[in-house]
Length: 315
Ligand SMILES: Cc1cc2nc3c(=O)[nH]c(=O)nc-3n(C[C@H](O)[C@H](O)[C@H](O)COP(=O)(O)O)c2cc1C
Image 1 (spheres, rainbow, N blue to C red):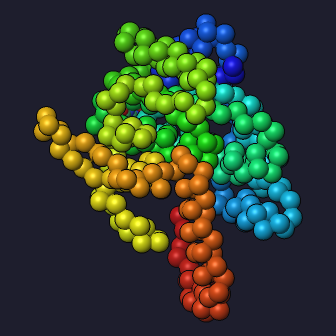
Image 2 (cartoon, protein in one colour; image 1 turned 30 degrees about the vertical axis):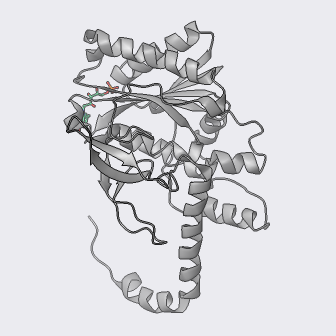
Image 3 (tube, rainbow, N blue to C red; image 1 turned 180 degrees about the vertical axis):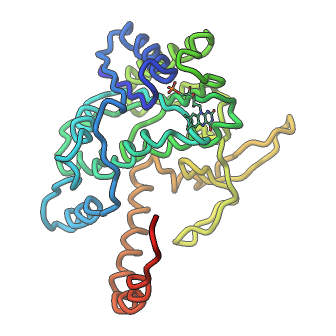
């Protein structure tokens, strides 16, 4: 069992303390544990060059070999992800800034695309599927009302790594570094997360499931709290309501206690981003968008001139 802790908070800060406590439980159960604080690494921003996805498309069509991210030799990302993809468990602790995961974490996670695990396994760049399970810890100074996009934002970064999130917690009302040391229940909950991660790793892959608080969130699939009114998808699919994180579709139904529940539609998991086949369908959308663009290059070129030549003073 290998478990990696990833922290995006201050050194000796609240996120780091909680991740350390969770790792302690893993270590006690015999796991080999490592911990990184993203502040200690050089991580470049994804430039949006799309070189990775263009290459992936080419490889899928039997053209060329995959060279990976263009930033591969420019920072520590390659080293971190290569290590991560040998781990069976990941525990991520991220401070909440402006309701969302901190930008340092997002900068890190938005580089995952070039390292999509299912693709790397397919082309043999990663030899063995680590079947990663994940535990997410969002840490904020306030309650849920000021951390509304925190766990959801972290959850959204898990799909490209095929990480199955089995537990998550929101640590509330922690401001100054060490504040969480006054909150025994949060420390204990982090310890429990470590135990849950080990439990999940020791469970056969096909039998793994949610080990977090049963009532957490609205979505029965990923336990996010963000359910929104569904719109028509690119191919005409529509659900009355959808989970903003995993994409599960269903409806809001009042139960016998008068409480709203999000009930999955019969085909509610066809857009479940946790499922490789559903993500492949998304790839279809991307490919179709790209083809339409390529077929209309003349029009684009013509309209482009106006904007390329238009200049405003910068600061
Ligand atoms: C720029 C900034 C924005 C913040 N925004 C929020 C917020 O929207 N909600 C919240 O609950 N806490 C917010 N906080 C508080 C931090 O989440 C809190 O101090 C947390 O304990 C930091 O984690 P760390 O000790 O691991 O660095 C903010 C802090 C900073 C520096």
